[in-house]
Amino acid sequence: MAGKVATANILVVEDQRAVAGALRMRLRGLGYDVAGIAKDGNEAIEKAGQLRPDLILMDIRLGDGMDGIEAAHRIRAQYDIPVVYVSAYADPALLDRARATEPAGFINKPFTTKDLLTTINLALHRQRQAKKARAPEEEPAGEGVITTDRVGLITFVNRHAEDLTSWSRDSLLGQPLAGVLSRLYGVAREDAAAIIRRALTTSEEQMLARSAEHNSDRLVALTDRRGERFGVALHLTSVMTHVVEPAALASMQQTMHALRFVFDQLPMGVVVVDNELKLLHCNRQAEGILTKSTVLALSDGYLSATDAADGLRLQALVAAAGERASREAAPDVTSEICALDVPGHDRRLVFVATPVPSETNALVALLVFESPGYRELSTPVLNQIYGLTRAEAKLVQSLAQGFSLEQAAHHLGIAVNTARTHLKHIFSKTGAKRQSELIHEVETGPAAFPIKLTRRH
Image (cartoon, rainbow, N blue to C red; front, side, top):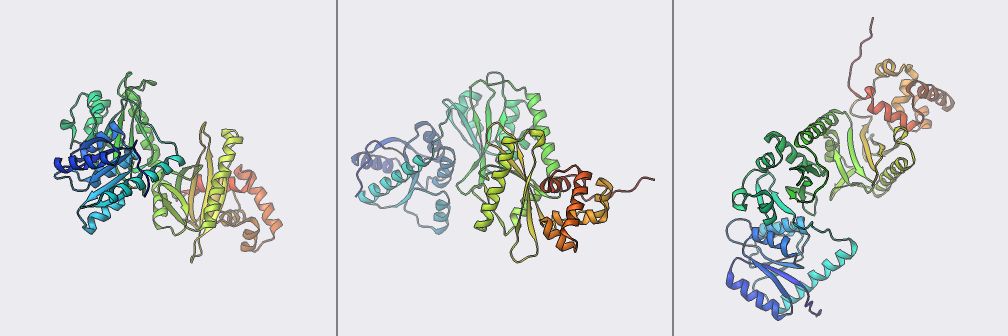
């Protein structure tokens, strides 16, 4: 049997005082330090943030209000503290909810001292191994935290948040966070609601400004280990940074809302990822592609391909685009392109990767569209916008479907040298310098939209 870990601090969450006291005595007898005892879910979350124990023993049933599973869900998302459930209940639905929070272990009542010791030691060992693989994130000293459920109602307020806002926890619990944001930051209630929706629907951190003394607050989505969002967390800090006036903040937020609206109108998917394929933003068309696609997958917030070889091609595409951002001047950055076959269909998913220069990790905007696509590039539109001949337009359409120049020539029944001559003329007329840049131009420019142009007489 594994040896005891005398330095481990454990938080006990149990609504029955006598049971909690007996458990504390057993833990101390085994050599553990009991950091504290919490009687309900809210107190458990607060003490987890204050005490930062090494482990939490959580009773699933906690009387009225938040149960142990919901409390564990939020603690794991905010503080990444391992939770071991203690329960006498074996209801299948309850156990399914508990497993979804990825607990460090289960202890069924009644349990033996050996059960308790073995489960705790195993949970602590796993947590130590996990910490070796990644640096733990430190919560800023004196940070206030307010969390909500999926519909934006406040579920938790810590003591620092009470001090920083001058509002008691009891007065805030169950209230809409939009009203709190409106009062704290001087924005209209509908704008506050829009900020919360953005935090819930994207991975983007929303920065908020209270005043010159308190102006580095953050609103972030709360996600479980499966990447599912179950609420938002408002982090309040007294650390001073640059001053952002509420009016300027509201203007920036309106601008971002307008840009997202425009992206949602594009007829192809727009996905923004970092160099590790972490999904940072996607427009409405991309959401539809991800939902229906048998080629792409989204796991724990990361974009991947269902086929391993396709996954490597996608990673190589993003890596190549990222390299361009580091070696090419911003105005001259060009794109990379690749196409993945859709199994069982005569279609492809075409990706055009455009790097977004950054001082830190390079971001990449992926344009994703099905080939032959949601709509085929119109020959008359290509003619009127770029002055392409019918033969040149046909070549562009073939290239946009993901064909190489040689494949396109064979598809059109022309010689490869003829196709090269056409391509030179196309480059001259569109201003593109290479094939990937040409596809990027026609798929994101006016020719990409389902518009109807009329000739002027």
